[in-house]
Each structure stands twice: as C-alpha cells, then as structure tokens.
Amino acid sequence: MSWKEEYRQKLVTAEEAVGVVKSGDKVSFGGGTEPRTLAKALAARKDELAGVKLNMALPTRDFGWLQPGWESSFALQLTMPGPVAYKAIRDKRCDLEVGFIIPSIGAEDTDVLLCQVTPPDEHGYCSFGPARLNQKEMVRDAKTVVATSVGGGDIEDLKFINNNPIVELYSIDYVDNPLVIAKHDNMVAINQALSVDLGGQIASESIGFHTWSAAGGQPAFSAGACLSKGGRNITVLRSTAKQGTISCIVPAFEPGTIVTVPRTMADIIVTEYGVARLRGKTQRQRAEELIAIAHPYFSGWLKDEARRLY
Image (tube, rainbow, N blue to C red; front, side):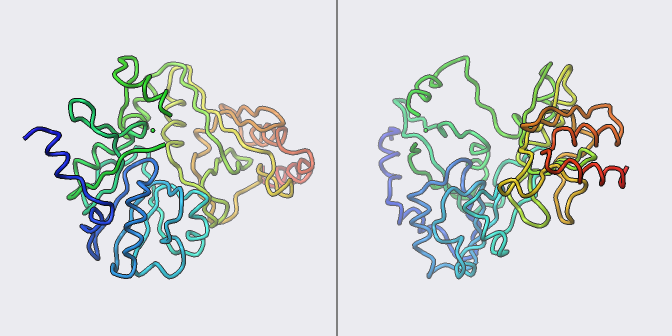
C-alpha cells in the first residue's frame, strides 16, 4: 500500500475523529494553538460525555468548557493560564500544572491526543509546523492520536525553515534545560515580571492568590543565564499597575504570591525609571537600587518600609 492510499484511508470528519473519546478519558492537546476544528467537535459532545480530563498548555479561546456548568463533562488542567482562562481559574473551575525547572515531555497517561500537523509532503511525511515543543514525544506516548491540518504555521517563514540546514528544532526539555542554556557564553535572559520585592524576589505568576501566568521557561533561563560564562539575567517590569495606583516594586509580597525566581538569582531589574543591579549587593543596597527605579510617587513609602525592614 502506498502512503497516499494509507493516508486516504485515515481521513475522517472532525466529528468522527473525536468519537474515539470516551467518558473518563484523559485528552491532551499538542503544544501550540489548539486544533480548533477538533476542539469544537469535542465540545459539541458535552452532553454525552462525563469526567473527561482535558490537559492543555495555553488556551487561546474558550470552546465552552471554561464556562460554569461544564465541569461534570470536562475537567480542565492548564500549563499556562492566559487571559481567556483567568475567570475559570479564579472561580476554581480548572486546575494548574506546577511546572518543573525542566519541562516534562511526553503523554504517558494520555488516552487521546489532539494535535495539528502539516499536510504530507511528496514523501508522505508530516511535520508539526512552527510549534515543535513536545509534540513528537506526546505523539509517541499517547494511546490514540487524532491530527488535523495546521493553520495560521506565516508561509514565508515556513518556506525559509523547510529543509534549511541552518535551522534546528529541538524539544522543549532541551531548549528549556538550564544546563544547555548555560553552555552558551554571554547568555542574556530577558523575562518579564509582575512584581519585585525589595529583597530581589521576583514574582511572575501571581499577586497574592490571584493567578495571572505560569513560570514557563523563566526559572530555567534565569538559572542558565546566571551559570553562563559572562551571562546576565535581566527582569523587566512596569513600575506601576492599575493605571498607576499600585507599585510593582513592593516592600514584601502579599501572602500567597508565588516566587518565580528567588532573590539568589536576581541580577538586573529594569523599569521605565532605570536599571537596578542586584548581583553581589547586600539587602540594604538592593532595596536602595530598587527604590531608585520605582515610580517617584511611591518612593517615600518604599524608603520608610525599607528602613523598617532592613
């Protein structure tokens, strides 16, 4: 049988494809954007399914299962929350995976994997398009794989990448490995934060118990840059939030705030008011550096708190 004949035999409608999902199954989405046709078809089965565990990285749109009343059909587990899922997280209608410094790969306990691939080339091979991440390992491990054609993919970029020996795509457990990152001399990591306290702790995931994001690759790249010969770890953030009503440089974090990067890896902090260099500084010196790049409206309050704390 030629690959074209085998390919034609496997073509089914989206509704037929998601028919393999049973109540109680764990369904994972491949890295990158959700395969929308398959997601819509699965959501349409809401009333006939119960206890399906949905595991996805970063939801980009709500197919219904982020709304109240869907919990008995679909239980969501997210890697990165994203704006579309904020309300569901705050209402405790979905769960968040706590990432490890080296991301986990594969899908050993997945019953059905929904993913996107390119149409076959002239030799019958498909690729994952621009979203390599951990999809190859997930396809390898999942019990059943359902794939649809990748969309969106900029075509000029894909043409440049195709069969180009200067471009290499690796899995996320390699790209986000601090030991690999540290092998690059003069590595500079630039990450964004929600808040930094006067001791240099960096919060990029939550303010108090309000979750806004996940750690992603920030701990790995922060550690890798710190271990790199000549490397620097740069964290950027606005000096204020909520239209200037609160300071993002704070004396101490609210209870429940997740520390994404510990103060021992804090290096360079940047706001629109300047650059704070924390590496090798004492607690008092760090506080002075950070107050200098805070919004002037809050500097007096921060100085008073720094005197009290340090």
